[in-house]
Length: 308
Ligand code: RIB
Ligand code: CA
Image (tube, rainbow, N blue to C red; front, side):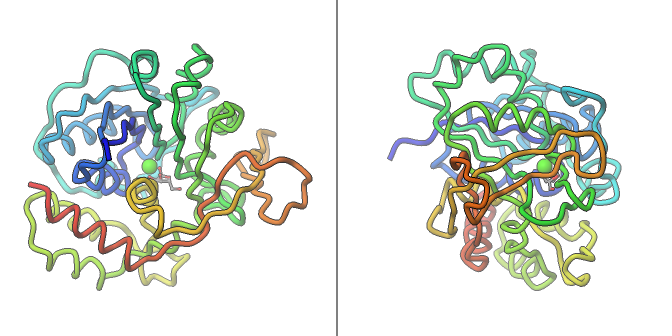
C-alpha cells in the first residue's frame, strides 16, 4: 500500500505530543506538513514544542506556525493540564526552525499541488484548516478525509457543554462541518476508552525503546489524573485520530448528523451529535464510538519503541 499523505494540525500539548510521535513512527503515513496553532498554550510554545518533537523523532516533516487566535476572539489555554510550557514541564532539546510559509498557506499549497487527495488530521482548534478552506474553497476537492479529535455527544470537558478544541474555535469547526468532505470525529466519549493509567505507562516504559519512548512516558507521567476517571488516569485524546488511520478495525463508528452551537452563552461550542436519528438531518460525519483499548496501547507501544 502506498503511504497515505497527511497534514497534521495541532496545538502541542501533551496528548498532541503522543499523537505526533505515533505518526512519526508510522511508515504508513507520509507526513507532508505539521501545522501549528495556539490552543493548549500560546502559539510561541506550541510551535517550539512541535519543532522539538519533530527533531527528537528525526522527522523531516516541515513545521509551519499558524493561528495564534481563533477566527473570532482569543484562545483559552489549558496550562492546568499541559503545564505552562505545553509539555508538562518535560524539557526537550530545541528543534529546528519553522518553515517560513504560514500554516494556512502551506495547507493550501500542499492541497493545490497534490496528485492524490490528502488526509487532514486536526487535533487542536481547527483555525488553520478553516482559514485554508475559506480562502480557497475549491481545494476541498483535494481532501481525502478530515479526521478530528473534537466534540462530545454528552458533556464537555472545558465547559459543561463544550469540548476544548471546538470551544476554542467553534466557527472554524463549523466551516469544516460544512465543507462536504468525509469527516471522522473522535469525541470525548471515544477518547475515554484510551485511558492512560500508571500500569499502562509502566508497560510502555518496559518496552525499552529510545529517547522518544522515554520522553513520551515522561510526558504521560506529567499529566494530572482526571476527576472524570476518579483520579485513576486520563484520556489520551489526540493519538486516537492517528490510530484510526493506522488500525481502523480497533474502532466502531456511527454515521451521524453533527451540528455545533455558535450562540454566545453556556452552550457555545457544544456539538450536537445525533446518534439516534432524532433530528431528521442527513449524516455529515462518521463518529468514532468505541475503541479496543488494549489494541490501541499495543499499537502505541510498538510504534514508540521503534523510534530513536
Ligand atoms: O479536549 C481535548 C483536546 O483539547 C485535545 O486535543 C487536547 O490536546 C486539547 O487540545
Ligand atoms: Ca490537541
